[in-house]
Length: 459
Ligand SMILES: Cc1cc2nc3c(=O)[nH]c(=O)nc-3n(C[C@H](O)[C@H](O)[C@H](O)COP(=O)(O)O)c2cc1C
Ligand code: SF4
Image 1 (cartoon, rainbow, N blue to C red):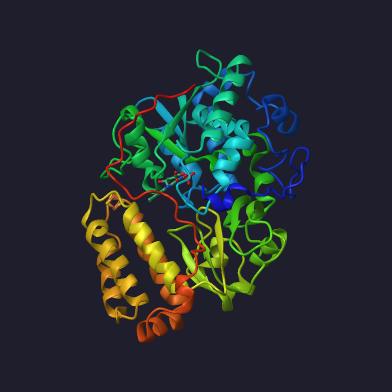
Image 2: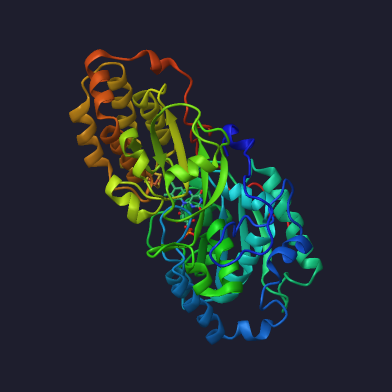
């Protein structure tokens, strides 16, 4: 999580149980400290099957829940918007006993939503992990949290202990065993294969696929890897059903979503929005912009820039954003002020993305590095336009994971959104704004070979 967002402001009012078409849902009951089990159950009620485990162990009951999730249309909130029910079905019907990994790595520097859930609403995440584990037939769920987010890890460890004390976790007929694991703070460590590799004792690096974790993951078992926000939504679908979930949101992307709003806005922070609501309403909820806007980065650092002219018309759903080449992705909305130099911001981002690769495949080692160099050259006045386009073509769709594709996407979207500025820099070299402090936070260290698992689970 970036230092810029650590002082996040949670603007959601404390509220009783979430109603059908109203917000907040996930952020109901949020306060400045972790909500304990009693507080959590006072807001949401107990999990419907918590005292009736036998029926959930039966496959047909679990399949009924997966069908309900399919009807709800829940899409993954980790970035790729993959249908949750499809993944659950594949893992539930895979070969061998299933495993569950709740992905709370949150390597996106401009995102704080997952850390917010882990730190302040740990039982919602654990409810989701419990429901998902039981639906796919897993007797163990691992909650993966990045090692620098100590308050999140502490909140989860305490919440697991509370549930064990209440007989709601721990295996042996009390619901799946819940285990906390910390993972390295690094952008690629949150990629699902890297996560599984690390939890299995290897380095936190993406592995070459297939098989993907849903076929053969942790301990070589079919493994459901789900983002913690996705699991939090699942916890509420298990309580209120598909119709309730769909009473908010866009038809093809139902429900609410957590958005991390940053940049020149009065109250940067994590907000829960109805999918399909306008960017303008989000900025208004954030107290309004504090400067003129040059554009916005949407989705995350593998997302897309959109220029100022389009901002008044933007709505936050994939369907609405598609004509602008953008997606909701991991819920990042990073505003860029008019004072920022979009070329310098993009050049820095390209260098950071190149440094974050795990240096295992040609497209990252040669392509991303060369792209970062070309962008640095362009921002200093070199004519690099054609080379950048050529490198982008050679780099995309050739890596073992999605990192080079995402990086190329964000770079090309910047050139599209801020074309005039790129031309100006190619003609005249750097501008005065190039020397301004960066607006997009870029915190993590460059990749060395990431260490194998050093810390054991803490609960
Ligand atoms: C380079 C890279 C980094 C990623 N980092 C994260 C992360 O920090 N957290 C996360 O939930 N998903 C991350 N993902 C996506 C995961 O691989 C995976 O798709 C996701 O955890 C699945 O959860 P979902 O279906 O609930 O979205 C990353 C993907 C890539 C390519
Ligand atoms: S594509 Fe890049 S980040 Fe992904 S495994 Fe290969 S080198 Fe690593």
